[in-house]
Amino acid sequence: MKPHQPDSVIAIIYGVNVGQALREARTRAALSQREFARVTGVAQPTIARIEGGREDPRVKTLDRLLRACGSTLTALTASGAPDARAILALAKVVGLVDWKGVEVPASLVRAGLDVFSLNVARHQHSGMRYSWCPPGQAPPGGEGVTLFAGDGQGQGQLVGVPLATWPTRADLLCVYRPAEEQPKLARLAIDLGATAFWVEDGATLSAEARAIAEGAGLAFIAGVSVAEVAARLR
Image (cartoon, rainbow, N blue to C red; front, side, top):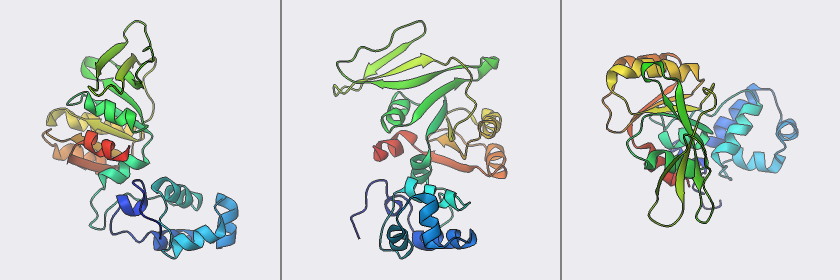
């Protein structure tokens, strides 16, 4: 077996029998390996190696294979607790409501994610979308554009541009707000179609927000630094 890549299933989700999970999903979909290969475009020998535990797929590859047979990758550890790294590895769009420091949006953007922040106070439906400006490239200008301090290593700087429209979807919503505000934000995560509600490390937790999120089928993550997790995905 090849050495595990940083974004491989085994490197991210521990205690999960990947081959068995894929084989069971394919069987439920009544697909032979040959039919499955034709549907997914993945060679049948590759599917056989994954199902036999002889090949370690990347997380997004396994997620694509499972979705092709009507299933999804449940980003859980063997203990049943949400695996923050696996959930972030599967995300494409991340929404933020407040954050501890600029390293939060910066690390997410540099991990290749589409990142926006929302200002939901006093019904001010506004926010920013973030990008990374590499060294030597002129940052965008315009009204409301925010240029954050560089990373101190000469590798560029974070840029925030006002949102033109209120976002309609996010894969996860990460918040750094007081406990009394979290139930409302959990409902916002549901409205955005998120699969996870993430309360940043250092924020007091709301049991009500957890119940709302988990009751709607969202993973609830707390006490974990999203910036540190994102940095390990780069």
